[in-house]
Image (cartoon, rainbow, N blue to C red; front, side, top):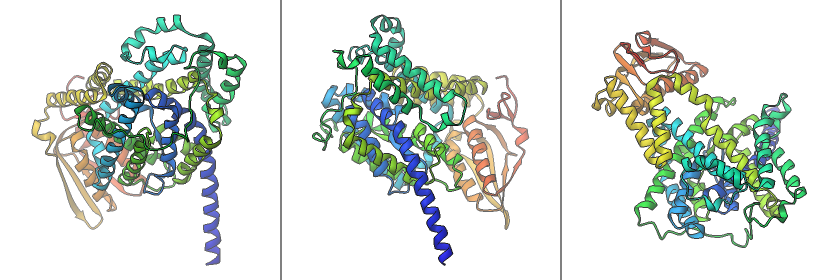
Length: 528
């Protein structure tokens, strides 16, 4: 018993030290990113840090995913900024948007309670990729003038395509002391991680950015510029700390439109991050996606009431957390604790950060949402996926995220009708489960396997995975869409890793429409 206790104590100490270090390194990334996301969203800069503090400290007591970091996300900037502008801008727009965050969070908790985490599979994979790429393009467009020192208030109502068209004008209006720092910031955030050597992987690029640009801005005399948009402004954060949610617009359709958008985009993006991190988690522990939604929702209620931004399980910080050696969810707690200490003792230093440096970080975040490598993969999947992706991106850029994802789904449905999918097939999956013997369960897919079937399909394979052998029978299947194929390939790896044996019957009868391994499969080939 004594030996067992000593081993347990060593494990606890090892986890504690790993999580403390990982939490500190993630804090260095989260501080400037949270400030930049808040400013780009139309919130006071400090509210971004407040949201990240709550995401770290308040959510950890729920069954949240082990290695995920909770905080404000670049992917929600466009929704928050549009909401703030819609409700009058400045303090009024911010506080009404904060109330929308709090209302959204209640539904997010209910999603978790009623185990709706699985519904993220109902959204086509390519449409989600298009939505994220469009968000990235919008972020980049809105940060280019900030990077160049142009007053952001002069272009805050401009559409993304107009901002790209106006780049030559921004260059002509640039304040080159500010722009020089921004361009140097871009070189750091893109160039430093590309340098050879393991040490570049262990030191966060945002830390290099702050260490380099803060003293350089002082040396260049940026503090003497009259432009009030040159530096981050925190103000009397602790003096103004309190409730900042204004529910006066709760009776309007626009209020609920933003609640729905925050709920759908925030929850989906968060669940996708949890799944991505879960697939790489070497501890073998699997995340409770519904528990994660409950914890996330609780944190968002507090954040919204205090005037903070909506938070998600954020992919850049979560990936970094894992790479920094985190072992448990307490790294998220430590990251929040370090942010709290920074706001308590280092506000004067934080206000020395140039906004152009934050713009460089956000442009990098936008680029990673666009992810050109992923776009090339989508285009390799065939003309169907290209059409879904392009439609989602274009409609999002021209209108908003909700319409973008809806049009992407509509194009997906039209393509599948062309492939022979009947309208009733979208709501009536023919997936059956049968026991072959004491150790073998067969999952049979009849007709088609498409994105709207994934909830039932996952439940079936979850049940089947309790046996030693799982047979997936495609004998009577005529079509599998990209979402179905991608889900099954990912799930298959997870089952094999857990020791389940898998047999696929008649899958060879379904030929991919392109040479991509995740391309849609059809029983009778047509030209793609």
